[in-house]
Length: 424
Image 1 (spheres, rainbow, N blue to C red):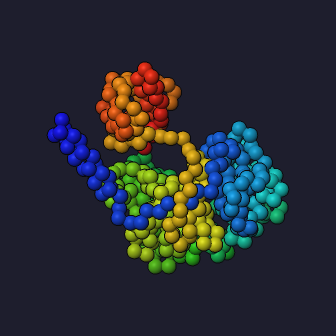
Image 2: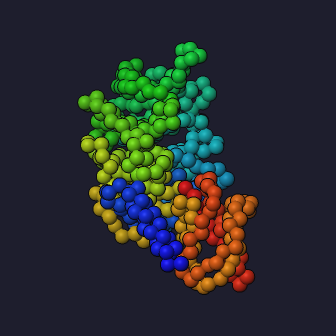
Image 3: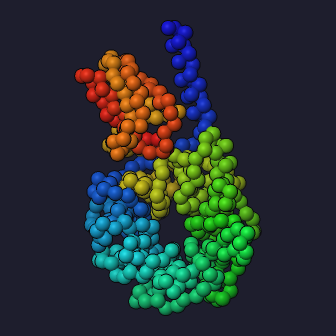
């Protein structure tokens, strides 16, 4: 029995060491949570952004909300699209307008009145000019697929349309408003050719003047100019199951890459490189990998910080970053990346799951029958009868579970347990 306990202890120590080795030796930052939008409106959040007055506009499920940035209180609601998901919101630089995807088409809200002003068709991407006077969209109606349409924000009418190349999908505008970067899907010339994407840089002072910056395999996603306008970052898939963050310097023509496979080696386990790459400053880029947000230095192309928060969006105001998760948590972090105290929001309790094992803490000794169900109620595994001790219990699961949310039930006569756990 003593030898068995020693072996178990050694296994726990080894697992702890391996887990520690899987996290790179860089500072891990906590986020100071402000509020939980999910308590106001159940559903998925799609982003939160600072307004010029320092308050926050956030979108959850079908409703944009104005949130007090000091108290987290919901100040007011904008027009709701009841029963529809509102996705990919963006705010004009002057704080006057909100634009987002909806099932009815791309909607434009007047933030002051809260009213929806216009639907401009099913666009694929959009961005405001730095002064907020123009809106650039790709698409807008079936006859303009791939074309860039320009709207005057005072009249909300289309004033110009141009097509630098066919098949435009994603785009962003430079901080000085002089250039537009567009990802263009190129059709194969022959049946055995692979589909490619081009990164097109359009001179907005002469819209017939554009440059093909780079041609890559597969699809380019999520354009992002750096604040100084010298770099462009985007996410793409090389067509061979490897994702990249690609950073292109418009001044030096230098190209830098952050490969998903290299991150897997750095962290020690496979996961997905995902989310919109977002410049925190002209030399730091943030993006999501595994259970962290990574802060990357673009000068030396090295990982600098880990943030224990998985944001759907990141916005900045003075020295503060605001981060919003898909389930509606809004958190603050100092823009200079200084750790701040974390205020935990009471949330649903989940059991810890790692390496096909669950950790369950019991307040008594008992014998119980353990089973695992998915959230629809379907039984996934029958662990069988097990003796539970006072304190920490490790429950092995002798099968690999797909990613998802599960429920552990333990029936021990007087002890009835039902708790969720997450497999990532």
